[in-house]
Length: 473
Image (cartoon, rainbow, N blue to C red; front, side, top):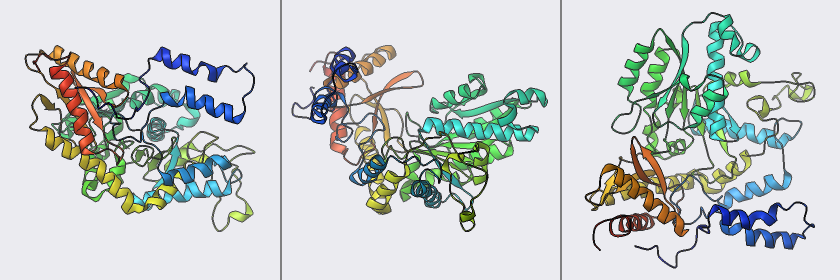
């Protein structure tokens, strides 16, 4: 039942109070200064034991990964030079590299000749900017400039139908952040029912949109390309058709799953992505790029003009005489913030260091490990699979006999707490509809099928034969 004793610690397993006590000397800012060796020793003794080892094959819970050797080459250069790449004047090389990287990624994902991209601090911010662009276009159709008049413009230019944002029931909670931050409120966000594969049910969505008219007007439909709970990919192409019929903006939140379009065997899941108005992607997940590394793609580069803010000293409107042949790139015109890191560089070194074939090989390893795990568990006693995996996530339940639904929920929580307390393996807890489930995630090629099976074995043994279970050993 117990985790293997010689397994390396992923983290200390300390309580929040113990971690806080260990870290207090690091934030004693009134203390005497430390030499660099003393500082390093303090970090090694006080902080490092409580960090998480994402690079170990027993880390199965979240979307985090250690940067690869190729990523570290780019990250070290970016750290050493500390370049802000908001515009050409701050860093000619940094600004141009981001511009070229974005263009190359649009080609890599086959998004069309007018597509463009911008680096963001996180997928949450990318989703928020996508919804802002949708709202801006919605305002333009009402006859006013959202950037100038704000939400008050809707009242001044006729009330019309209330805007609605549609998304999957399993959509990421950042969509709630987005409607809050934009002043739309959570009442504007409507979550759509799912089909048997935990994707948006297109037929039901079509009926709901018809019933909403004319009181509600579609502002944005969000298709999730890899939900964070099960990894399901919403059917983008039919949703694009539905969205176009109602004049809405189609956003694809591919923060987790969009990388898998690069794996040919799974590319069909993302059919229709070239029809999306915007797409979010997080290379810091499967590709192991250092955080922050998120992108927002748009189908038409002109949509980024809605974000542009010029000033007298920064991102000036006047073009330089040297810009005749090729305009100087100003990435800060496409997205905030004013100070932005050279996040493109580690991604460039990853893709050039591994090569596309190497990247695909790693992505395929994630997906194959989870799919093989599902096949192995399909006939295992006391294990219930909660969905058929589409990407690199699998949710399951340990099901000792003679337990009520509420007791089974409690068993999953006890298993989670037991595994996490050991500090040697990780697993995550999630909700699927009204049920508590255990969740395994693979975003590293270091995670093997054997290690996944061992985690499931530990979970099952504890849930069935241990303190959480009732079956005699």
